Image (cartoon, rainbow, N blue to C red):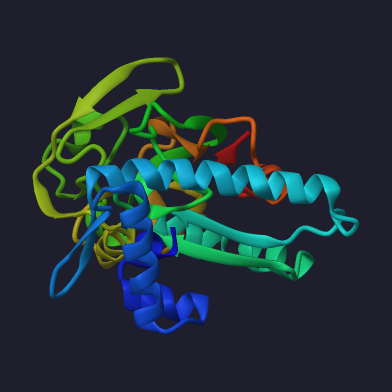
Length: 289
């Protein structure tokens, strides 16, 4: 497991406090015992074979079951302990939830927390995380998915972008430049009014990006209007750095989900963390319970 999660034998050796030859011998011994190759070694990386990926999933299940057993029978089981690896989206994990992560670790000092920020879809079994916080759908139907909240999103622009132009309906924005977030709408912006009217806006795209921080910077600089989460731009709206272009219209909301592996054996620290995460997400302004 440590070799797979660390990505190399040398990195796993450092994590385990062992020498690299010792870890190599242990891997070779395991392969000999199971009569199959578990990993392919190249000059720059180590990749699991199909047999290695299958064994990794089984090994995690076995170790999770052992941890549950320990929690049940250890005299000090009331104190949460062990490793907890969380993958979270970059903006939400850095901007809104980093304080929560630090606070959780301070509350449970015997937990070793890995807070990994990643926007791209991950291969859950290979990454070796305990849970995955994802904005939008989770593209893995083998996982249990729990919705934490729903993100309100709005169309914003820098004060100088629209000038004195009167904006009352999405059609008034047909020729206004936009900055597109490619993982979501791209160059097509669906909007819905408070009264349930739908409109599809296809503005000229001045810039596109797959990063919400770059999208935010471009919108504030006046490159174009952009769809951004309310929680992310609340301070800009209050300070007048960005304007809500169509207050009566909204882009489709997005779910914030947490996903974890199925099974009876779920460590107590993961259950406690997910419950605390639910409360933390729903306390963020602009995210509905």
